[in-house]
Amino acid sequence: MSELRLTLETVTPLFLSGADPRGKPELRASSVRGTLRFWLRALLGGIIGDTPDKLNDLRRAEAAVFGSTQLGASPVVVKLTGNPQTKNYRPLPHNPNKTFTFQGISPNQSLTLTVTPRQPYQSIPEIIGGVLLLWVLCGGLGKRSRRGFGSFIISSASDDFPIELPNYSNAQRFCEQLPSLLEETRCLTKSYLQKLALSPGTLSNPPRFSVLHKHYTKILFCKNSFNSWEEAMKSFWNVLRSKQYHNARIFGFTENTSRQASPLHLRIVKLGKAYHLLITVFCVRFSEQQPSWKLMEEFLKENKQRWNGEFVFGGDVTWE
Image (cartoon, rainbow, N blue to C red; front, side, top):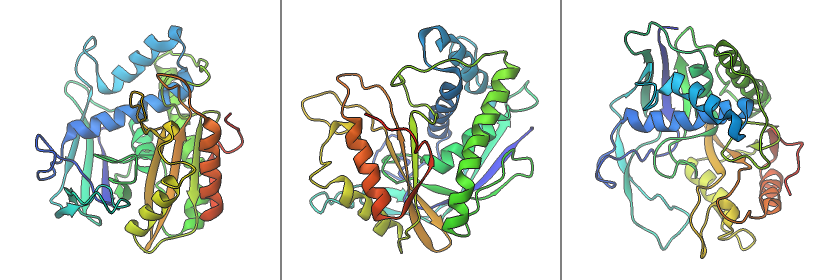
């Protein structure tokens, strides 16, 4: 592939600031690359594994897409362009006591993401298509992206995009399509690793970092809809901040311990004029004492019951 192009529509405010955290948003390619590297590693780790003997293979596979200090610059160039409208938004809309705002790119704005080969390369690795799709399906961009901000849907893609695009027409079709789309991202990863002559490996329990694997990833799509992204986000937070889960370490909060990024990723998905919750959780090793994954299971179960949820990936395994 000589180029991949996605037209993205913002679903929730996108906080993508530069040197001034409360200044005007900037369409920074470096922010996109950092986010894509996270999702590439999740794909690679789910196949290669995370044991010490496979870490060099993991670094080699990652560097072949995004470069490294040892192997040189990335063979791909990432650009994010557009002329979006901006506005001030509260990054903590669930907390009435926190009224500060950040300037963010507004919902319903069009942005273009382009990936091209860096000279002297003539093509880009096909796995890029899988990384882009996994990122848009399960992740976000910018500040507070693990809590629903910076969510996108794909409006269109270049003709040679290697995976069929999600169907955003209604909840049932989207839900039915998700398992096969996620499996296709893994198939692209396996094909990519075969070309590099890298073999599959095993995973620690729990893994050292976030990986897309049915034993260590749960993805819950909620079919009940909301009238706005604000309503969807506040409904999610009403559960997360309830007494049962408030400040629990498993969600990335801190209490007399060092902070660790939350393993819980919220996406707000826009299907037609309706908004839905998509919750992705990675079972990952914490730097200090392991928290209770059983509490995370209870949280997912409650959201499943409240919003008519369905596990589209990894719902068969119980975490203790």
